[in-house]
Length: 263
Image 1 (cartoon, rainbow, N blue to C red):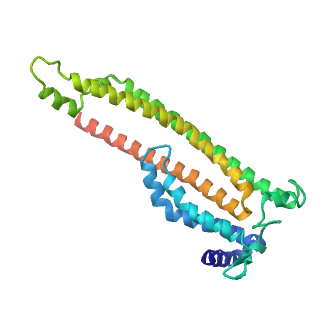
Image 2 (cartoon, rainbow, N blue to C red):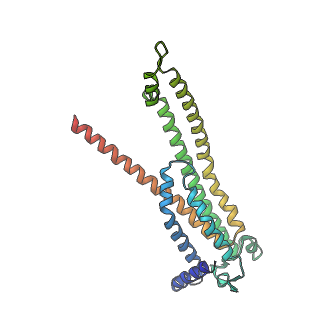
Image 3 (spheres, helix red, strand yellow):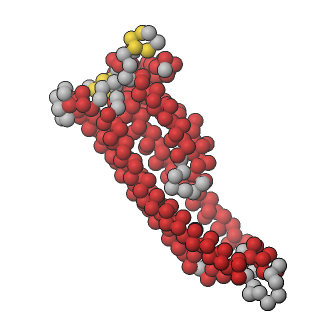
């Protein structure tokens, strides 16, 4: 923890000429961005999994970082010495203070209370943004799955396994009897999985609002970390989705061009 404290303190000193007493708060935001940049390859790989739970691994890997952040702004001493970070502020609110403490220093609309209200408002905006996009993505995925299932070619297309089974069937047996039953079971299982994934896609984005509860009970510095990493997650997913759609459009354009050349 002393290494983290030293790093944040040094970043704060670098930013102090520009941001004065809020330099350490900006250093926390910068530190969070550096952590997310380091985890970006994992986030990109998780996104390729195309599941509503994509990104869980980067989230789990951030838990130790969040725990260190929490401890750094909750402990009065670090390495046997006074914790210098506790004296730093974001505007009027100490970075080590909690919302309950701010309420005792002038109420929700006091100098410290307004800082926390601003933090809560920013987290709520990011959470709403995430929920809306998550629901849209889940709806699009469900519609695409339904359209694929309703396509006659998709329903009548024989699988390689079914073709092999038909080739080895006994004379007089109905071709593809067993594979059809197996295919129906697979289709039923897939439909159940799609329903589960659709529900998860609608519920998971709402979990972002749980960040509000966490931010209300942890030190202000940890709340800043939560706001920054949540906003990064939403923006990162939008960017990855944009790149994916752009690649798909380029691929479709290339195929159309090939068809025209062949014609």
